[in-house]
Image (tube, rainbow, N blue to C red; front, side, top):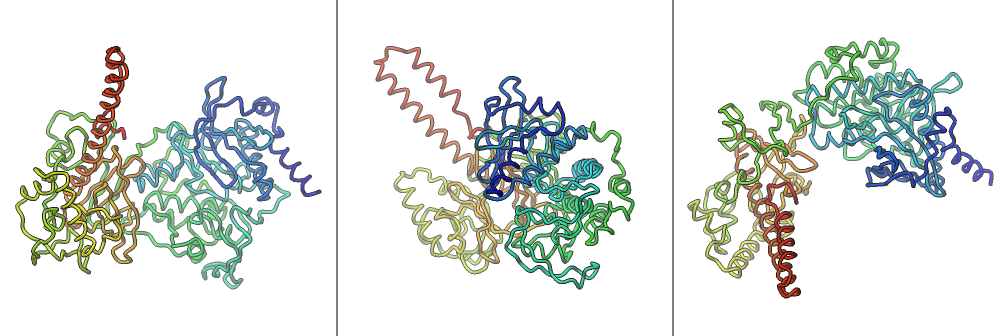
Length: 625
């Protein structure tokens, strides 16, 4: 009974106004004062909603927490801590442009509500996933803003302890807002720095981790027993080991984030979190080729095992010395709040002898500028982003010119083999870069066969089934394509920042674009098709595939980038144009039924229906699915 009473008492504190009269005024809200429009994110016992205040129309992100789950998980004091820290930062210390603002808190019988500043552009992690990596300008911009926010936090005697891209939000002005203070620590003269992290970070399932590296002063102290729950990539060794924790743990996380922004991957990576923790405690990471030297020097100074030897520590001159590092030499710290944010756009850094590439793709612009400059020459050569309305390949003639095209001809069930081979198409035998049966066919004849010209529907389907049956028997990658006919395949380097992995890409009917690890023979993923998908050939080997949520950076060592772009564009346009034709047929049928039901008596209404459907039916290039 005593425990239940204490939990209820803590729960009431969560929305008790303790900061100032100003806080009391703004917290007198109820759920009926807001429109809850859509979900922004979900956690184990909370959901964040995009909301608007009924009276003002002001936008908020409202975090809604279930009381029953908070009680069940024993999380009341951590939720209270998050609320207190945000209230301290917002009202006691006056707030900061790069720290999320708490506007009000309220509750009902079942839930707690935290009304927070709305970050229109989501999490920094979303942009890292979408773009792969940032260029040096964007990395410097966001790294300096994170450091500025940490400086304010640490002056307020608050350590974040869980700094990571998920907790760095991007506002409507493209500046950051640090968030999620549930595991943060308030330091004062009556508190010790040493405190076990909550269950969100360390659970009661114990796992023996390895001893620290030899550079650690505790190298003979044995392993630490803990298990990490959540994102392990950015947590410092001292936090993992529940040792004395200071502001240096946030500088470790900053180093890991800078590493990821530049390279495309966090520094400590493994197949599971246990192995990630082993790598963190063993300082087991390396810089990929092409990592800028000055940034490398900075990250090396931040990812140091001993906190006292880390850049930003008091022994190394504190945060002022860190701000004076050469990496930040072009940052005007006095005007950091008014800087113009850089444009975040697809970018592939230079690596393996290839230059850096920025994307020219802009979904909002379809006009051709005058002049014959480099961009115009690339466009005329077919290099650059595909555009709708005739910019893409609308037939097979543009891309069905690779050597093993005959492997997919739906003309007969027996095609004589040939000794020729091509690495642009995967093997039907054991070696993925050779073809086990091919023949020489004129390209125009091939195109006509693949387009099934002058064939009945029944004959087309018969030939397709015939070819599919042969593919089942002889193509080693058929197991990954969901029984679809393969149109084009080849070994492609799938790049993300400074890292690359070779994959077998399989373009199939459907359409689908699968990619498989050719060594382990495991399906690794699929590039999602949509009407908004666009391709962009940067040169004969490098091409981008833009999807609504991500850009894929691909490198064809066989120099068939343009072929791949044409093939993907053709598959997309064929699929979505056929969908639009189906919609037109449905529209026509609906209009006909309307006319029959009304006996042709209301021509004006029928005309309105026709106009409605013609307005909604768009080409595949319109960007509407």
